[in-house]
Amino acid sequence: MFDLERIQNETFVEQFVYRPEIGSTNDLAMQLGMQDETLLPALVLTACQTAGRGRGANRWWAGPGALTCSLILASPAVRLAPERRAQVSLVAALAVCETVSDLLPTTAVGLKWPNDVQLSGRKVSGILVEVPSHHSEMFILGIGLNVNNTFEQAPRDVRSLATSLTESTGLVYDLTDVLIRLLHRTEAELTQLEADDDNLPLRWQALCVLRGKTVQLTAGSQTHTGLCDGIDRDGALLLQTESGSRRFFSGVISAVE
Ligand code: BTN
View 1 (cartoon, rainbow, N blue to C red):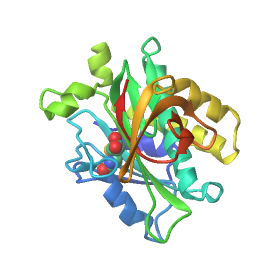
View 2: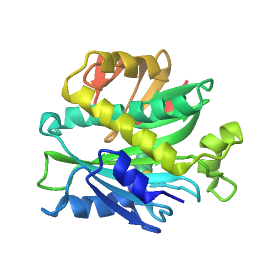
View 3: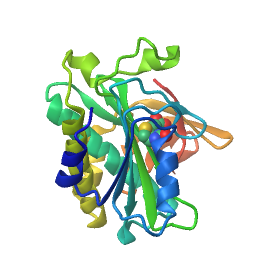
View 4: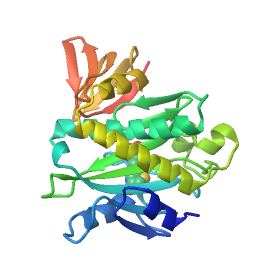
């Protein structure tokens, strides 16, 4: 299914761990991230993830043919203060958007703040950024991208919202090729983030699917409703609410009109 040698030789990955089946690549990446001998950047890749995790209590469902992996990265310039975590998630989403656009140049790709990528308005990818405890200079970038998987066997809520590259085009993609493209894009986006490149905020703003829509955002026990002005340069979602303009660094989008 994967050409492991190509992935190792053609990408910035220094250590590569492949498991034919695993609960969650993020879980193993978190363990490896805490071991001194792990060479970074490291990649955990699987052909079959049985207990994928999403943000909060969400699960990530992925049938055969999906791409599920976690990068373990260290970057002194991107010390993960909470407000920078939003940016890491966004640059990963940009990398996914670019990868998908390269492969499907005529299909609409968009970014749903903070960590989803949409293809023709349906979720094609989810991103989960985590930090191993006591290692604030390190982060785990978990990416799930629906490539050759279909959703007949998926839970109903997933079936109604998700799509994959193959569902969109009817083509079957070389998973190694898609992964290598994604890793190249991710490396380039992270380099831009470290350099504080002014183009990044322009690009995530241009891809923001919530801009101009009325959005309900739940943060902790509070729900805020407002017209979305997009995403600012720090990665915060901007809402014009009844109590004025607000910035949110985290939250769950619960409704969009
Ligand atoms: C979300 O949509 O809330 C984020 C989903 C993230 C899923 C990926 S798949 C690879 C990595 N391993 C996990 O357990 N989760 C992430």
